[in-house]
Amino acid sequence: MNRRDFLRAALAAVPVSAAAKRPNIIVMMADDLGFSDIGPYGGEIATPNLDALAKNGLRFEQFYNTARCCPTRASLMTGLYPHQAGIGHMMNDYGVPGYKGDLNRTSVTIAEVMRTAGYRTAMCGKWHVTPQIADNYNWPLQRGFEKYFGTIAGAGSFFDPATLTRDNTPIRAEKGFYYTDAIGDNAAKYIDEMTGGSSPLFLYVAFTAPHWPMHAPEASIAKYKDRYKIGWDALRTERHARQKKMGIVKTKWELSPRAPEVPKWEDIPNKDWHIRRMAVYAAMVDHLDQAIGKIVDALKKKNQLDNTLILFLADNGGCAEGMATINPNAKKKANENTSGRPRETLDGRPVVVGNIPTLMPGPETTYQSYGPEWAHASNTPFRLYKHYVHEGGISSPLVVHWPAVVKAKNSITDQPGHLIDVMATCVDVAGATYPAEYKGAKITPLEGKSLAPIFEGKRRKGHEAIYWEHEGNQAIRMGRWKLVKQHEGAWELYDIDADRSELNDLAARMPDRVKQMEAQWDAWAKRSSVLPWQSWARR
Image 1 (cartoon, one colour):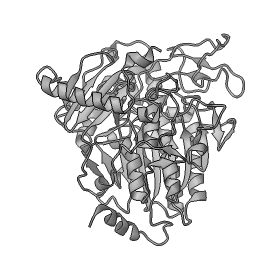
Image 2 (image 1 turned 120 degrees about the horizontal axis):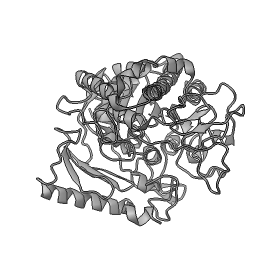
Image 3 (image 1 turned 30 degrees about the vertical axis):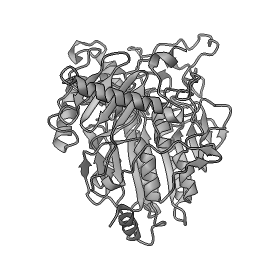
């Protein structure tokens, strides 16, 4: 029996009370979540809903994103490498095809393809693949979604997010609003309204948690107020031990040493502030899991859970970005990019922006990040962070739940996957067709390969190579070998099977392999509109 016949047979066995023979598909993505933050990947943060999905589903040990928010969203939505979709960097137009900063029309979104296959489509959360805030030509409803609630731009206040939108209409938060909770509520509402009929649902849920600013309700922060007194060094050791015990990392993958920019916990001042930062972060992840619980409960109420493919992943590794202090009373400069930072709260109080140790994060009057110290812990056991294409920047959890097909419960696969595979998987399980042309435009051929064989417990024929480029950080993975470098630095070569923590650089010992892999990366870059960092970033 081939894979498609297997899927048809499995889906035919779903009770008649389930709405559709083809599955509903829900893709849920966290923002700036590290590899080890959630329970199924070794974290201590309370994630009972994700724990349950993992216990009754499948986890990927080696799933990859593209190291940054906008490129990941472009890649996820299109099944292409981000440069092919026009978003090799962020929402800036550098005047070259791979770096236009706007999702192009030579790509199609999953929603556009799913609608051609008869699916209903809805989205909640962060869009962030177009710079056009005033003009809605490239908003979700113009790219295949029937319903939308969320933010068009990137980061912003969780209590009063900028560019909050319903369908094509800008709206404003009200008192008591918390964005993560609202995303869960609206996603559950769409499930209630759009499932149970003759058409299955594709739902994309793009959380902004736990991306900065560190915002959470005070009662939720209190739950974690003492948990992080152990500091980041002990937390990494603790998480790594759990990861090895549960089998989500191999025992031979050592814990990477403390990064040079991260001091020893015992040497730092302002410990109470650092503890508070991580407590707020944990509360944000906790609320994300609660929102996922609302989504799962909505599926259960509509008797749709067994016949729904749920994918949960993250857009990049933990974020080491700082937060410069901004005077809330200063006059705004011409063309100033405030990244969605409100100058004041809904009730008129000033918002203080900056990582100020005398100011405890969490309330809507603050705007802070959690810094490289805790980001290093989030990415346990790997090196580096968001932006970089070493494992700490590109390694994502992937939890798969689909009771009709995933029979090996609480299982872990070591087969690699990448964001480009999500579109291919959706096309496969939905019986859809990826188009050569769409609305008169020639479409770039799909780069991804379906993950469905892995869901069935089979070995799939994976990619000959997987590629990365972001801000001059470059990598290629071919089987067990990974060639990687930072910016304009030298190539490093790692045996990922033996050393996924990237501690033993083999480049000097294997120059022929380095040369061969570099040539293959160059060939990919040429065909995928990837340009050297210097040629576009300094325009």
